[in-house]
Image 1: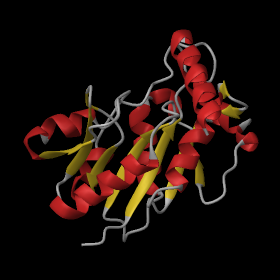
Image 2 (image 1 turned 180 degrees about the vertical axis):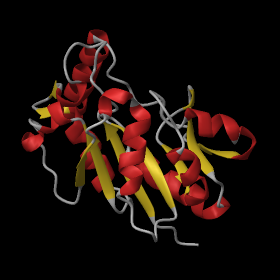
Image 3 (image 1 turned 60 degrees about the horizontal axis):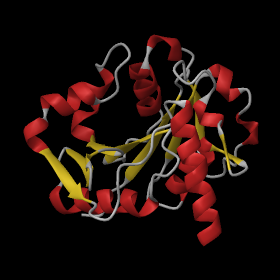
Length: 204
């Protein structure tokens, strides 16, 4: 089976804990979200949907968006489930599964994305997620059979209720050499991310 897997980048949050749009935090001269877009573009994901809230969308012109379909979630204030709905509504009918990427995980690895797609092709499991050295994490792949359950989500929740309902069917894709991607939730996280991108720039 050669699967057609779409990517939905959930980046419509309001970053209330951080106090500034974490999607746009400057990391080595680029917005954090740019790293997520680049990782998606360097993977097998097709199409790629980016979901933003209206406020962030106003300044998203600074992003390199080629190959990415932008959709604005006018109901982002109602919670993450609305971004899941908006993203799914953009998908063509021939998509076999969707991989949800988080807009505040700038160091997600395109090789990990492709490995998850490989695991899905081999197992045809309804849910595939990576297991890093520090445990299961993101991004998570969900097959078309569960799209109706994703569309039934309500409030400020992502796909967790769907994962909980199908916990026995989840296939974990081993990523033995990497830790879970860093989230940009706090000022300390941002500083860690800046140090990481500076180290990578020195070794590139």
